[in-house]
Length: 351
Picture 1: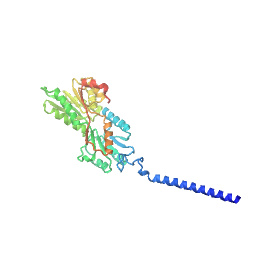
Picture 2: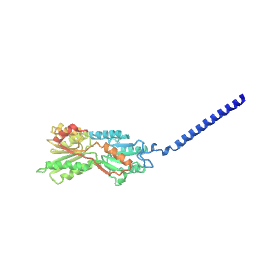
Picture 3: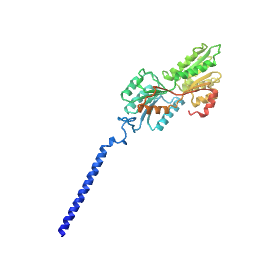
Picture 4: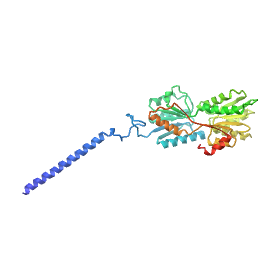
């Protein structure tokens, strides 16, 4: 009897072991199957930014490489802050590079972005020319490029997706039209001096072109001196000092940005002149310091150039990565201000 009970107990234990082994194999089989099918699961993240190979949305963080011209003005500072904040709001990983006004630094930065395989490259070019080679490198690497604020003169427009920024020629036209209206009844020559932006840059070229287009019909409006002041306040003061020393009679100053106009005002005041009265001043940008000077009557007319391009840039990045068609030229909306209008607008200025 005891022998029978022992055999039964052994048999029972053996059955339990077999059942446990079967359950273990079933669980292992289930886990292996789940692991093997993970790539087809709808919850799996894609491996590239924008869209995955099947056309579905990607969950990988967008990496935006941005090369800025520099920090030469209040306008540029506001532009940089807008881009950084907008990238943060969009959840992008921003790789930011300051070119310090040198094209070679921007080209190095763009090549670095290509090596890092960023999702999109954006930059504000120091000058218009000399970009085809590096832009072709980005295109060959499959990285889309977006231009902001300033354009390039590349004939192959397939090298970039879009250009977001102001119409600099139109800004020059606004400045020239205001001046032409002010002196439409002039009987004597009106002597104009011009502070140009960085030589070869799109705003310097275009703002000059638009201004001259609007004043050429009046032979009394004459530019007697024109020189670059590199968009900086210090150079604006320096070049204006030389203008004052070389010319006994100056009626109007046309500055391609507020910073140069503000430097010129310092030179005028040091020479005992009243800015805005003894010499009328027209500038472009509309940054807070410039608007303040206008509200005080030191600048007579400011043509706005909106630096807050960040939101538009981030939207363009999303659209490009989603393979949406976007316009190759996106123009920002801008205004212009007399001294009285600047005084009214100043309290609400964001830059």
